[in-house]
Image (cartoon, rainbow, N blue to C red):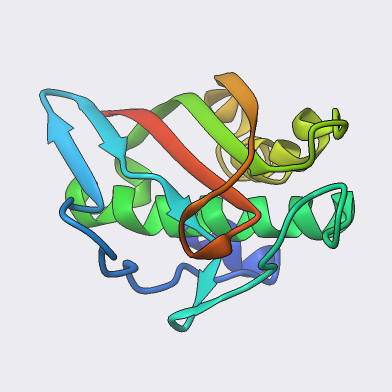
Length: 152
C-alpha cells in the first residue's frame, strides 16, 4: 500500500504545497536528504489554531495543529522527492510550540506530527525529535513543524 493510500485510509489527504510567506522555499533536497522549511497549520491558505498553548489553545488542539503542520511538511517533501513512496526514513522532526512560560506539555503537542509519521511510514517513520517552547510564531501560529527525511 502506498503512503498516499495510507493517508486516505486514515481519512487524510496531502494538501497543495503551502506557498512561502517570506524569502525561502518549502523544501531543499541535497543528495538523499530533504529538509523542509517550518510549516504552520495552514489549510487552504487559512491558519488553523491561532494562539498559545497554556492560554487559549488546548493540548488536543495543538496536537491537531501539529498533525496539519506535518501534512504540510509532507507535501513540501513530496514536491522535491517526487513521491512519498521514495521516502526511506523520516530522520528528524523539530516542533516549535507557541506557549506560555509555565506550559510544559510541548512533547504531547508535537506527538501530533510524530504519531502521523509512525502511522504512515511504520518503523521508518520513527525519528529523532525536539519539541521546543517558544513565545511567538509567524502569523500567530500555535505550532510550527519542520522535518528531515532520507529518500531512496
